[in-house]
Image (cartoon, rainbow, N blue to C red):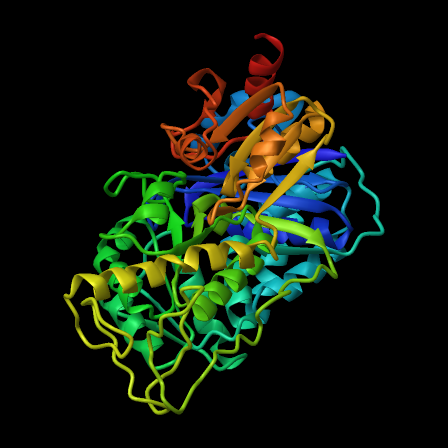
Length: 537
């Protein structure tokens, strides 16, 4: 069973909350769900909608074509009616009910409509409302649910499945991974779509020992983070494209000072302010190369919420143990989508307690070592000097050419050490039919749509997780394939440039499927595009 439900209305009508409640109702019955959220950069008004996928099997994407539309306003009906499947139904809640009647909530009417359509009992819905809503609002909202329930006929009855399902957004995954890694300080200035992590970590302060703080701008954020990390605190910052641009001077200072720093870069559509509340994979180059001068870094791009947990954990591990910049590269689609998975999945697997080598005697903060790494010390243990100027082992400024070269070589040697260490983790994954001669290549948030599409088509999918250090052994997988197709959420095919640079492989423009309208790939549209390239050429 696989169904797609679209709920739409004006922003401020509670579309997202209704979708969350429905996802919980279905997951309580043992069904997997995936929730896509679409909204403009307005607080109230305008048009927003969610698409909720419901399946008895794992699902990580949504469709253009939907089986049910629940319209809370006229715009939803007019904008999305063409998306209905052949036997699909549209429910025009705005025509059925007067929102002034007993303060009725259209979004809770929508919950009732969908629940009755799928034969879900009112008491099951009530149980979820009791868990999801404050007690003072439960009675009123359940009245609205019953109104929706009574206005609809049961069309499709779903049964109970013996599956224990959990739901987590990408942002929740980032927050879980950060707390699980023993984060000390999280600093950020609000910028969609990174902002939810700021809120979540603020809520989680009582659970752990970390501090969450919002500063006045991105420059203050990153420079304060470097100061915090200098004192020994495990520090992470969050931002999006424009904010990360402002941070480049400070990330370069990190490169020469070797103060550990983890940055959560959550991409949105650009350039400039772009389309602020929508998605794109356009920041790959700035993540891999941003900042003046050259210095080692790690760039990790998770594709779903569970990968977010592990990716932030690994990012902090590398930044702390190798004293470098770790960029956790996400985007709006991963951050604000809700993924489901079976309970019992191990969430944090490495680096929960990240130990640093501390030396009290004869300490040189920037020791010349064979692997480019240096032991880590902090103020209070030793006198520690950090500077943006080139320096010697003791942190004293130098300009002598031999000493300058020695320090640059020392930092660059980290790359091989980090690459060796990265092989302990999942730097890439293979999905779908392992014996297929057609290979789809993608990274980050395209994972869900590609994975679901190739499973339907019987093809193979190579998901790149580590962009830096790049897993060069994927060239062997690519060479085994007679057809290689790149799928990416930008207009240039930035991963194609990485493949050319790192493994001298050229995908070719004719073998790229690119989407750059601010929206993510949908499974059904992607399947059609893959079929054209696979079978028509």
